[in-house]
Image (cartoon, rainbow, N blue to C red):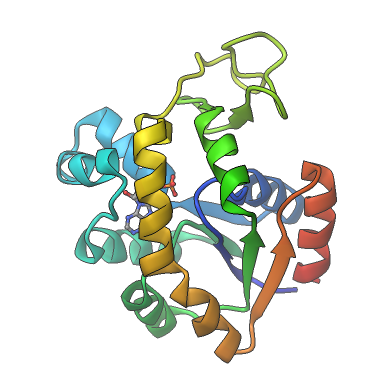
Length: 208
Ligand code: AMP
């Protein structure tokens, strides 16, 4: 069984949803840099204060703020890990390679129009980080998280203007990682459209 799994794919491709399902299924730790950074912003920590401006505009947070943090979290994790949103640059991937060997990089492939639709209709839970879609995957009660009862909100960077920028940033900085992991022989591309359960079936096949 693969024990270091990287989730690639643009914003809105389902990394959070599939990563969470996989972490429950395998008992692996899911480490999401986006969730960690949002928590730091909410708590007003030094990291949060430094990261906020970048996140609000859809830019990447500088590598030096992320790499050390992620390496520490990986070192503290016991058992398998699922990395959601890291690495996002070649420099981050090189830093990760110095610490652990990646067993599997899963690229969730979704067309741009679908990404925009998913992101702008996404609602997130600040309490447990669960995500919903207003049409495809709505919560049972409007505005309330099924899992923890938290009040759902729309992330600032899920608004129309910022989404475009995030997709450009992805293309420029993160897409090269598809080739990077392909060369290492650990890439699996998953068709990221269709039902959440169908996609998860493909994800499970890839990790075996
Ligand atoms: P996400 O929740 O993964 O979409 O991440 C939200 C925002 O957090 C991104 O738009 C970036 O500003 C920042 N971020 C998350 N992961 C990284 C990373 N590995 N490197 C740099 N910035 C990141």
